[in-house]
Amino acid sequence: MEGKVVKPSRFKRVCVFCGSSTGKRNCYRDAATELGQELVAKRLDLVYGGGSIGLMGLVSQAVHSGGGNVLGIIPRILMSKEVQNLICDGFSLCFVLIVGGYGTLEELLEVTTWAQLGIHDKPVGLLNVDGYYNYLLTFIDKAVDDGFIKPSQRNIIVSAPNAKELVQKLEEYVPVLDGVIAKASWEIDQQQSPQHQQQVGFNATTLQTEVAL
Image (cartoon, rainbow, N blue to C red; front, top):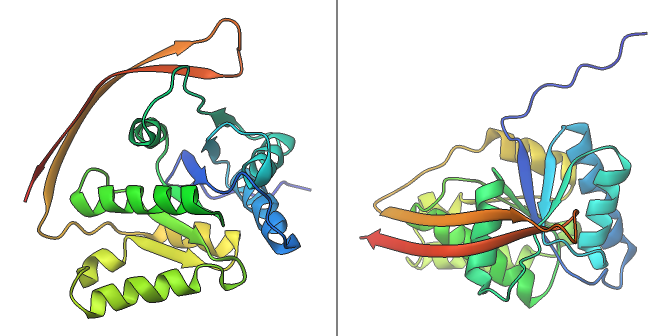
């Protein structure tokens, strides 16, 4: 019996942001595991924050157990959050956010703002587990209605209730850059840590962003 043919994805890697806690409900833990399994099914590498606990640990375990590639970004020195996220940006072709708290929300808004400014054209996917992000999506729609976010920029964020549907929407995403031109230039030297072969160290030497409105 012939094996099932997997249609090649337009992406090579997915950067996942999520909580370092598992939350109080099983549906969050299940969603993290299912996302990892979907990445394996689509032959997508995982890029994430390098943690082994919480939802991020469950995602990485699912990908690793399924034979997929996992890249944990663990800075060797204390960097600003912006630089850490920039590193992930350079190694992935789309972003997915599962449920989380303040840190996950900050990461969502940062990568979305960078797309708004034209710094990247990568889709940002929300795994809206059991309506977790419903109020946030309502807020964004309100900001569009009241003129604070352009309607075309509303589409930067795509959402779905399960991993399979979300990955499909990310595959279909078409970037729209409307009225904002931005340049981002940076130089990052990658060095493999000899003491921790499974960790990747970075020395961020330059981070310069020029925005022309």
